[in-house]
Amino acid sequence: MTAVRGVWMDLAACRSSEGALFFAPESSERKEERLERENRAKRICQGCEVREECLAAALERHESHGIWGGLNEMERRVLVRH
Ligand code: SF4
Image (cartoon, rainbow, N blue to C red; front, side, top):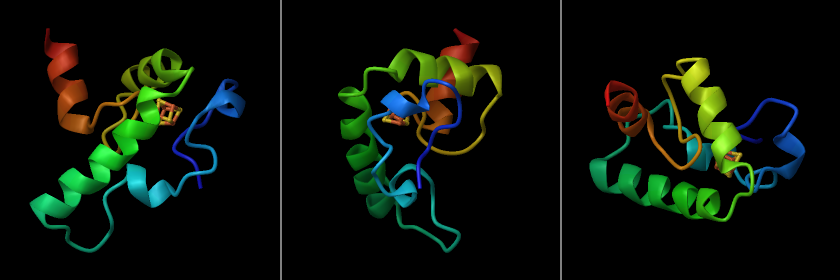
């Protein structure tokens, strides 16, 4: 499972990662669990060579869930407002 869709996906650092790292589980998740999961995903994003493309695509789609380009949904909303 990968967190990306698009022509640049072949270069995504998350291609072989668990999609579950990048998206909240269907069941509830404690705050500490969410932070740990998101931090693990963000560390993968930090080394991703298509991070900018990924973030731009998520912003363009108004992606409302998951880690994209190293940012979670709340961080992307803040970015769009500024
Ligand atoms: S920035 Fe993160 S979510 Fe986006 S393609 Fe790279 S590793 Fe995957």
